[in-house]
Amino acid sequence: MRTVFRDDHEMFRDQVRRFVDREIVPFHSEWEHQGFVPQSVWRNAGREGLLCVMAPEEYGGAGGDYGHAAVLIEELARANATAIGFTTHSEIVANYIVAYGTEEQKQRWLPGMISGDRISVIAMSEPGIGSDLRSMRTSVRRDGDDYVINGSKTFITNGFNSGMAVVACKTDPAERNLTLVCVEEGTPGFTKGNRLEKIGLKGQDTSELFFDEVRVPVANRLGEENKGFTYLTHQLAWERLIIAIRAAASIEALLEETIDYTRGRKVFSQTVFDFQNTRFSLAASKAEATMLRAFVDECLREVMEGTLTGEKAAMAKLVGSEMQGRLLDQFLQLHGGYGFMSEYKIARAWVDARVARIYGGTSEIMKEIIARAL
Image (tube, rainbow, N blue to C red):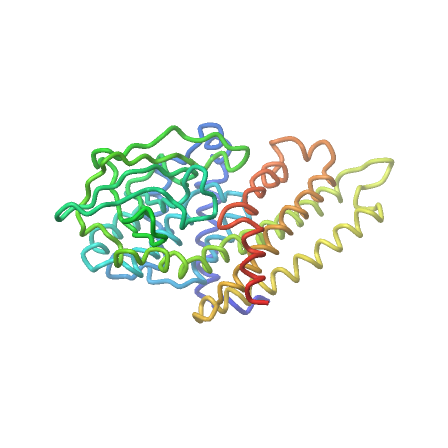
């Protein structure tokens, strides 16, 4: 029994699982070939109350908590549908709007985000910058009642479908402080590059964004000027825990699939499961998965209570993503040649999992964060 979830969380899980099985699983392969998820899927999710589940009810949200968000993250991971960009939109960008937006901004942007009519992105990463956000070059200057933005962003989840971007930029290139400014689709000078070709998460549209003398009202600034890095830091613990939650759910789902496969697959007149090597490998994987689940649920409980630290979230992200890559590789090996076929879930999950050790801060950055607290 997982005590971190209440009855209402589990009722929500049933709803999410039905939606995933009906609206996502049958079409996911098609979306991987076309490189994006149709906006109609977002609107369907919005109608069922699956987007921005933590947004307050006065803006059309469900008024849920981190537990409801975790349920959605887990169910997408179990179906190997993490390429669906719901999480970035709902559990990251919406949180920024709720936490730092003015009342006017919340009334303006949240209803469309909740309904799925406006897909949102967080635009931080830049070409050649990597995890060093303070070194970004995208600039913003004040011109009367407007801001003018110049620069480019890359690796932006939902970038091609985006209707609004929360852009991290600098008022002074020589300083390390950041400012967050919201830019809506259709604003002159705001353009989107082609969808980027990736080795995994092929159904997730990932694009470059370009800003050439983009002029937006100062009222589009999110929070205070030059406080953006502080805001990003406040949200990073949850964003990194999201990756750990995905990892734990993915490992559990693929472990069960691998057990079923090895019990049914015969070689040398016995099932693959009957070999001691297979049983020992799966037994060790079960033990590790159980340990990871206990730690991730502890972190989830703490984020729900508002006590999760950045160091602990970094531990969960580091251990979860590294374990996911290693165990999924073992599961693929136990599938033999079929594990290398894209039609098998383990093959797609193995490739998709590789980025977990990169985005949200690389494993090396997680180690640096943990080391600072030693």
